[in-house]
Length: 305
Image (cartoon, rainbow, N blue to C red; front, top):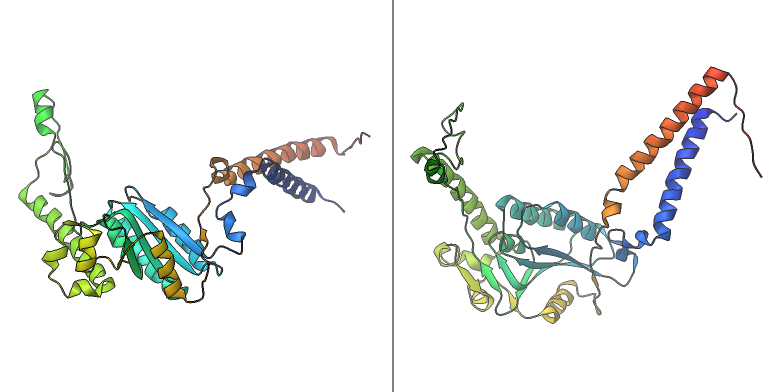
């Protein structure tokens, strides 16, 4: 006996199937994320860290995909960034270390132009750091900024009254002067973050531990040529150097093909919302149909053809 519940589910499945078929016909399925991993010739995954680092989610997702995929033998971190939020840099750094424990794979950081501050922090998770001779590395340190606009507002006779539950709650307001206590608090936060930065870099770069921290961790930037002498960089070179380093680390790769995460089309990124919309539409249709059946007591289906 075919029940209304069965018909409802069958209709929903058919609707979603037709949606998927339409997307495939339109060529959208070819751009699914990581679709190129299906090709057996791709062996080295490339994860790009570029621009201001404020979110780790996309990078972490790509790292997890490449680490878990057995056909990927190594991973390249392609970095071109001046850094960003320390939390983002720490997240990427620690995620790579944790993934390497579960899925042991060599990681090579490739710096063509810049890996400074938080970007260098992330690079330190790699087994080898390779940079072009004129690339910028370093800037190891922490900076905190608070804008002060009170003089501008005072000029236009604008005042603000702030009521807080503690002496530190209004810290960061551009309309209030920073007190000595607030400044000391912020300095402590910066110092603590700085010490974690130094500690992680030293653990990953033993050669740096032999040198005075003031020599490489005072916020200075270095070209890679100087960086290799300090221990910030392992090798100078290009993509060819990166390929050779991977071969040396894996020992079972002869010809390297790089795998890049495919960009997610806008529509596909919202596919779950589309599926929910179709599901809601089908449910609503069947709810109305069931109400009519209950009201009339029978169901008549007319076949045309």
